[in-house]
Image 1 (tube, one colour):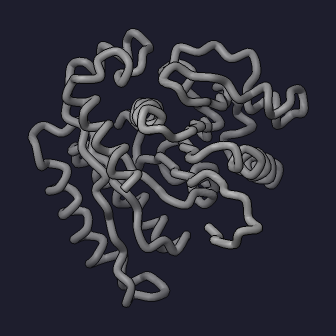
Image 2: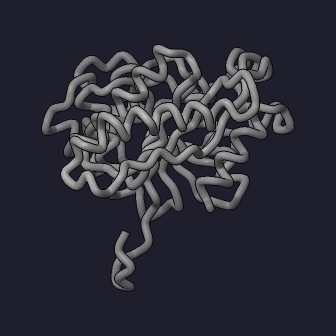
Image 3: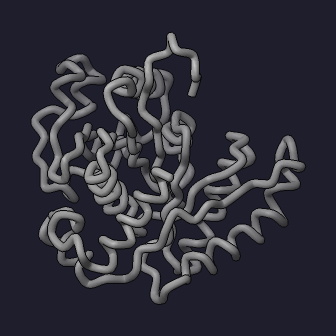
Amino acid sequence: MSSDSATPPRARILAVTSGKGGVGKTFVSANLAAALAQRGERVLVLDADLGLANLDVVLNLFPKITLHDVFTGKAQLEQAILPAPGGFSVMLAGSGLVEYSRLTPEVSEKLLDVIQKVAPRFDRILLDTGAGISDVVLYAVSLADDVLVVATPEPTSLTDAYATIKVLATQQQRHGVKLLVNQTGRLGEGRVIRGQLQQVVDRYVTPQLQDPGVPFKLELVGEIPTDGAVREAVQKRRLLMEMLPGCPAAQGISAAAEKLQS
């Protein structure tokens, strides 16, 4: 971000992504937004999973106007910014839109335009991307200042998280991403996983970078313990941060929000 006084301040953009589906990425995006809002930030969550959006389900919202309507000119941008429970704003994508499951020049142009227009109004924008490394996901991630990779301790999740990190390092020439480990079984497991992933990255990814002298850094933002309250909140379509703010998983999310602000 420019420090030039002529440049108006704009939101810090954080892409929340994962190597595979089912790791709680959208749950993390929504509850992290609530935790950041509680800490005084003006937050917008933009559903950048344009083909298989499910942020509306997590938040129990039934939007009349989505990003699809903005993209097609049926609605104004203003109309698509909705208040969400938890004190933040959302822009929802509308699911089952096959035309947005692959990246076209039109989709990339419209997504960029929307983000540029809303960025001056917020302190932080969370892009809830799709899972994996499709061109739509990678394009959405390329628009972000920071990337948060959500993984679980399962071997398949870690393998896919590594694949995502490798692509971000080699294709987007990033020199670091943030890591959040969800569904941990014991305290400190997130730190162990970060160490394991960092070792593999140092060995196989750093030598492929344009400047191998600058190491690629994985920053652990936090860990969210396995907690029955999460399933309960998801089933009730409620934010964990509002329903049970004192439970272990909610405390993990609060700690991650604090780390993001530090």
